[in-house]
Amino acid sequence: MKIQQEDYSIVYDAVATTVVCQGSLRLNGTAEYSPIIDLLNDVVEQEPSHIILNLRELKFLNSTGISMLSKFVINVRNRKNIQMIVIGSQEISWQSKFLKNLQRLMPSLQLKLT
Image 1: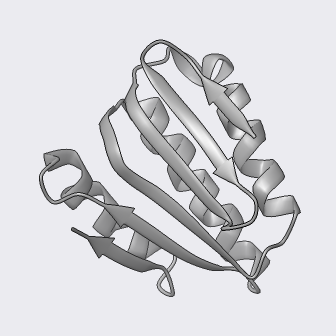
Image 2 (image 1 turned 90 degrees about the horizontal axis):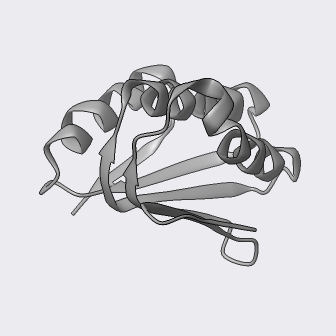
């Protein structure tokens, strides 16, 4: 599954159960985020044993995007049988702050900041 736009791309590799987000997500409102939300929900519905969310190349995420990722993590947490690993970059200031908050939503989440 892949969503490719001028400013961003979201790619899901089903074999590696990895979602890679790149670019800048500056979409307006939940309606514009709905294709991404659908992709993430489809990943959870497949119930893989683990999901890797790679955000290292995601330079910007607005408040609606933060809400979307938070809801995604809660959805994974509610499944109880899916382990989640989030990979981020210490070089991107919003990531080091926000990604630690995801661990509050899902204490079993493994966070790797490189």
